[in-house]
Image (cartoon, rainbow, N blue to C red):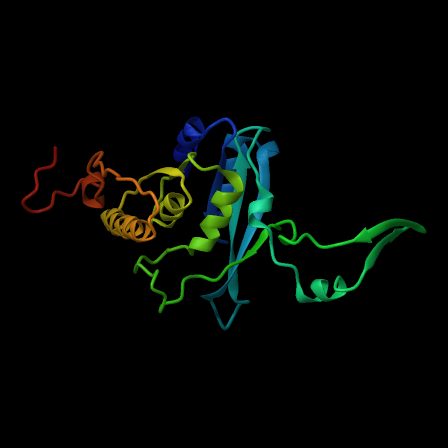
Length: 243
């Protein structure tokens, strides 16, 4: 089912836009083939490894502690702003540069080296913890993503006022971060629980922004058809007329 949806997403994507597709070890090879064919294998920008604590453990295999995020652009003109999401330097690196360091190569002195005060250039391994069960941000949705993960992606590849879309919105993390960072957004999902979870979450985001005297916008919920599974597999629920 993903192939047709990715084709539609490409048609909707801005010429300088990007798509990020998250998956795990069970389908990442199939997903990469679909993306290569639809977007062109020359348009992959990164295979991002999202490394997290928690995750799946087992007695007969290594602990599964990462997922994959494929980043593709629509063409060779894409937005990327690394200075907004620079990574923290390792403590050993900061210690080494606490004294003067000179750039010596092939017997030549290229002068002093120093660290960027904003951090190092971001890398393709994101070490970001999943939401803890005790976190106030937990929504109860099983596939909820942490906000710092989506914030890093959205800040790095879009500007305020741009449109961010998530067509498998789940718990609504993408659009919650988009609203908080001044982006426009549109989202959809097949499940009613997802829609209600996202609606409640966005109302809470509005309340938070209002308390902070920040601008916030109204949003509209549209029912574009019968999205319950019982309808599309042809089961007639009691008391409901299927047209």
